[in-house]
Image (cartoon, rainbow, N blue to C red; front, top):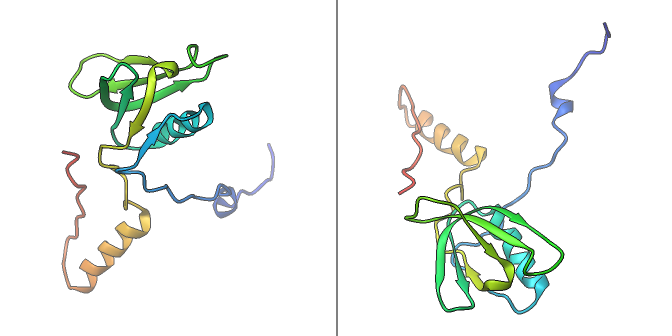
Length: 137
């Protein structure tokens, strides 16, 4: 058995990062690089996006996976369409653009924001403080 003592503060080495505010932004697939960048942002987004297809239709939902293949036709984005019961795969070659239409459910939900609300209530003399999450609807 090892005599190594671990300090939990030293184990936390991954720095946090600020999420880009994307809600309401629209991206057109002008190049493969722009489409790839927009789909990466959509994958990291914590809300629904609307994908505009080249055939003129659109699909709104939550992107949970993206797979880059050898070309656009082999690359797909997978999503849970809003108001549908099954997953859907969309080839990158079918995408004309996308918009970040849904509310980012985690925006402003940092530990610091929670702590600030807690201390404001505590300083106001409130007892049995319970901060409840907002409804996602």
